[in-house]
Length: 402
Image (cartoon, rainbow, N blue to C red; front, side, top):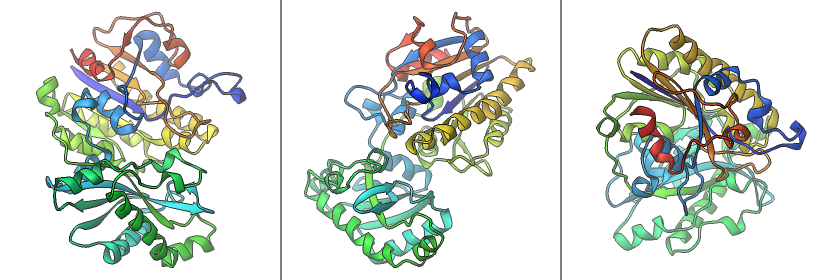
């Protein structure tokens, strides 16, 4: 049996007046997801346990069958795993965004989706001027980077872990003052680094060029998503299949590395609107010649939601349906192999909110021994009509694979 999980990050939404009261999934042309819904089984689940934030790290752990309350330690450590940073027991990893601040407001959580090359030169300069034996900056992809703190004792480590930090994509357009790190003594260290980064980045050559081109400058770092090294059992031990994971995002790839999935890098996979949709599907199909499970993650719908870009969210979902879902579906429909496809999103990212919400997630599965339900379309409204509900999202994987 071949198992394929296809995740359109942030596809879920809420009724939109501009769409006549429809959600994005209702308005989009998604014949392949609708086929899976009609010929397979549609259900609802909750990927976010109570008292946890509706974040992609929490939600994707749930999709992969890991209880976040048991295994989640923070976003930073998951991204560190993919970047080859071996966190030690006395260290804390923080996600470090390059952001654009204008009039003391969060103008852009991604600094105009700055390029890897531009960002790398900035992070390297920050490391040379603000880094030390106890503070190290690591360049990642686009605006997504890491800072690792080495702690002198448990008290200091807990101070970093328990500092109140806010994801920058949650405060788009808002004044940053009340969202700066707080609650612990170590929060002052974080604030100092963030403030000093502004002085260094203000005169950086990359920003001078970006301003000349009328592009958003990366004029500050934003620290959040901190945590210590996690420990999780291997996916093969829990579900008795060997598999792979495909994503452009360090967070998703990091989870994959920790749980023992092969991480496949697809040329042209960017984690943004221009990602290589078709390439992800083709590499996924190829991986199943040697493995029995593949997890394909596409970030673009989530980015569109955060940007409040309705047209791009619809377009990215339609491309996900055509080039990812359609390619995989057509391959297995013409194959003699036994297979199951699960299509879903990790959380909703409503364009009106520009951030994640705790809404239930709709999913659809189709393939060998999956009984057909009565739902005809893949969307939030029709999914609410089903009696098929899995209240704990991390139990969905066991149902899918059993």
